[in-house]
Every structure is written in C-alpha cells, then in structure tokens.
Length: 169
Image (tube, rainbow, N blue to C red; front, side, top):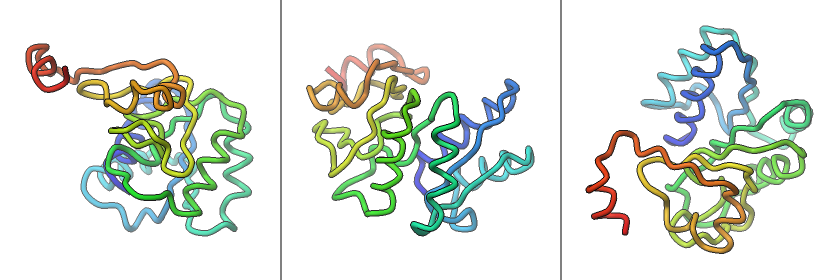
C-alpha cells in the first residue's frame, strides 16, 4: 500500500471521529504497511473497525457484499504513483467498485487512472466525486479523465495561490 492508501486510512479515522463506522478493504496485508499508512492503520485498529485483507480471489466475495451494502465507497486503492498496467486482483476490485451501484469518492485520482494523461491503465474507477490535493492533476482535466473523476474538488492543503499558479498553469 502506498500513500494513497494511507490517505484512505486517514479519511476512515476522520469518519470514525464523526460517528461513522466505515469498513476497510485493504489490497494486501496490514503487516506489510509502512510509514504513514502503518500509523493510520494502528489508529483505525484501535476503534475495532472491520477490515478485509484482499490477497487472493477467495477474499472477494465478502468485499462484494460490503461494497453493495455501503452508502458511499471511498476509493484510495491507487494514486498518482501508479504506472504500467493494473494487476489482475486490484483490477477485479476496481471492477467491483464500478459494479456496486454506489456513489464513489476518489482520493486524489480515481484508481487506475493515469494522473498525467487521463488515460485509464486497463481499468479505472468511475467516481462521482474526486477530491484531489494541492492542485488539479492534468489527467483529471482530459475527456477520459474527467469522465472517471466526476465532480472535481481541489483541496490546496494550505499551499499559497501564487505557488499553485506558478507550477500548475
């Protein structure tokens, strides 16, 4: 899990603090988490939130039920660091997210979407809303990218406007 997954765990913590009971689907094993994702995993674990670690196709049946029964799906599977093709198991998770019939909020970029070009890398999440950080990623503004991103919300994370204008024309 990369930093996008850490952002997802951080979002889960904020939801818990507001009285929600999220369920977490982790593409991998908790014991393999490092740095920021590991910190937020420990924080979230303290609240006894249900987790499902997905390491094989056998793990997907329960996840499919969770996705279909939730109010909103928060997509933090992949972020801007994704390059190349999406491996088969995460591709199946992305397909399940798209097939769940629930609104999706993507963290930074929809999983499976190239943040620079806006081209899906095999398969991409179709989000209703994408909350992106710092400044809009170029790929979110292309035809394919915007159709995957849905409504775009930019959180500048406190960066000054002059800096954003200088580096993100």
